[in-house]
Image 1 (cartoon, rainbow, N blue to C red):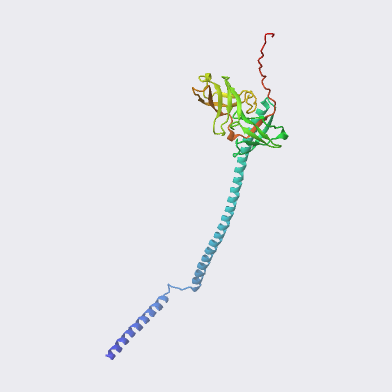
Image 2: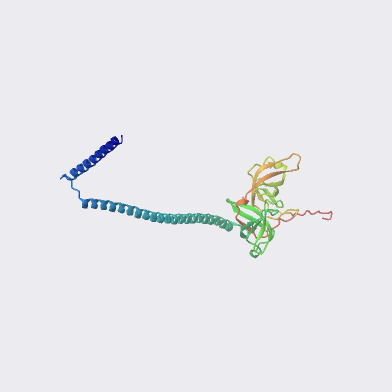
Length: 303
């Protein structure tokens, strides 16, 4: 049994040796063929060329990447500079537009100032006090400029000369103005066309209309929304309010209030001045003459 195994192993060994020798013989025969010449110099050159090309491609990629990163950083910097420059240009454009608008408004105020028939003091609103009882506002002129208590204040807005209020308190360099819509503001007034008279008073807020009271009831059928109300220039016998120049626009009728049982009627008046947009005012610095009092005389029998 063991002998058979040995013979079988010897047989496979001989087969293996035979196959190895056959492969070696085939390779020797293949390389000895005259049509195949192995040139180790060309092989080395080809290998070196491949390595050189690879190194060149890698170095080119790295250098291009570095250049691209540098160019990107430069582009980012230029973009930031252009953005900043554009922002400055836009700011300058806005400033120029604001300056043009300011110049236009100032030209309007100057034109109005030149045509104003009263001695006046131009002023600018410098502050507002919403907590004040009368919602008064501050102007940048005071006693040093000639401003005094109870002086009328007017403004030119939207092509209209409108009444703003009167000086409530005059400081050395600033003054407090009581606006027309204050509850303590009373102005003797009349209809521009109809000539009916009354008293305009405020309701405490620029959002609320003014009230013109004590209008004769016979004017009911003649008054229409849109009628212009102006100051009459009269003083009030009660002493409330101040004396304002005649002919200053107070506003327009927005609603007629009528009650049969009342001896007079009222109208709501939309102010001519938009107080939320008010910037420049004029303080009237002139004594407004009081209308002469008509005195009735009695003639006695000795007359």
